[in-house]
Length: 183
Image 1 (cartoon, helix red, strand yellow):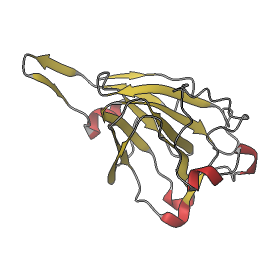
Image 2: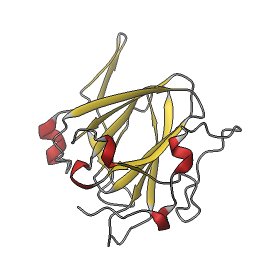
Image 3: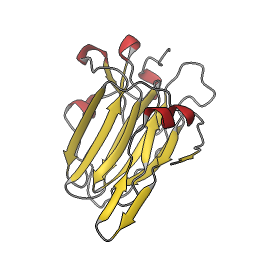
């Protein structure tokens, strides 16, 4: 397993070892001891997955307060462009983001710590997205931020069609209107 640094040190890209042969491949996608040694000490308690079409944009989301979540995300089938935005009060990288492409082919994982808004746009039809969370979901603690807030400077891939958002995601405030995360 290789851990790649990002422009925001707490956010990490993990590249598991893939053992390929004529039958396909085998990969260890999570091993708590190895991840802790790599600086990812989150104790995961919930797994989620979503199935989406090309052009679906999910995010930017986080859980507030005691229900905050760190996430380890990956693509099982298809491809996404994944983004983490620092929303930690007082952070020197507040409002900055890190993005990476996650595909079934590259097998990469993206570690999004607590205190980051998270979102992704789907690049291929029938994309299966999977993520581990270190805290249980709580509807009352769910928060969101506009994916296209100019203050964030996120350059989402141009897919030639407008992104498909949930009703809820169309109503989120911009960075200036959110309550920053306090951990």
